[in-house]
Image (tube, rainbow, N blue to C red; front, side, top):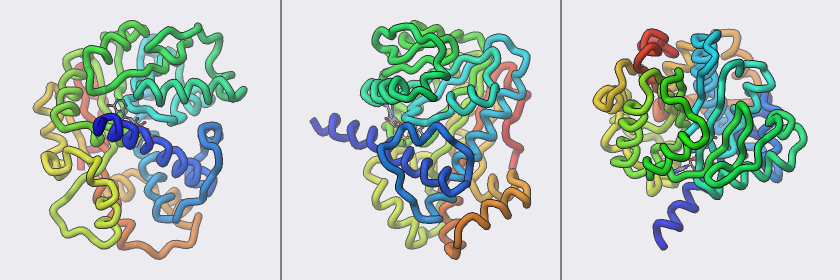
Length: 317
Ligand code: SAM
């Protein structure tokens, strides 16, 4: 019973993420006309939260676009979003015409994927991007030529693998795996197993992960509060407290190359001054210390293998 309650709470993190992403999009941090179809009502979040979601969105978007650019011309490439929740990645990439030769697989708990499929079916603009879907059969919640939405528990890797194979995953194709604030909600041995399983299954792959860190520096007030609310659900923070430990985590499990940047490095190193100025002018803001602290508590990581090892999505720090 306690496990079921925990799983329901973990699924609830998706509702909060999508509301925050809609808030940031509405304030102009990034363009996303699709997300609002996944929420009942929009809420305006505080500027610090909007900026946090901006840098998260930007980091993931950067890595996915670099992968698509680097594999352009490949007639069979794949994006596999683990714990995709109500994220709109497929719909954005589809509308940008960025998915030539690419199939997008999304996986989440069956309840979450079923809810997502129902919301897609209820929205003409989303449904327009899912051309002639085939009536799905469990664990598939939506199946079309370029988009496959599946329900499975990521802690059960045999079930995950058979769901993906049944939905047409091609293990030999260049594949980007995305985990955006997902693995941290699984017990560390399960998430470690998933990282090793993916390396074993896919010879040419890149794993993109965005999530929390717990560096050794003392927490400020804002981060203390942030982690107090989250800490009962978060795992792996003590086993992998910093960016180097996260790198080792992947290198020890079959990945050949790994770069891990905290979000201060990403924000200052990867975004041009023009983009930073644009973002910093969007809302009144004076929480600079909290912002830098928050950025030091999150990271973006890319781990690659096979023919994708020579295609770094992020520069080494
Ligand atoms: N990646 C999405 C995003 O960034 O918008 C959603 C992030 S939300 C914080 C975490 C997601 O991971 C939820 O949708 C949750 O249901 C999913 N998740 C966590 N543990 C999972 C598991 N064991 N199996 C399947 N999905 C899981």
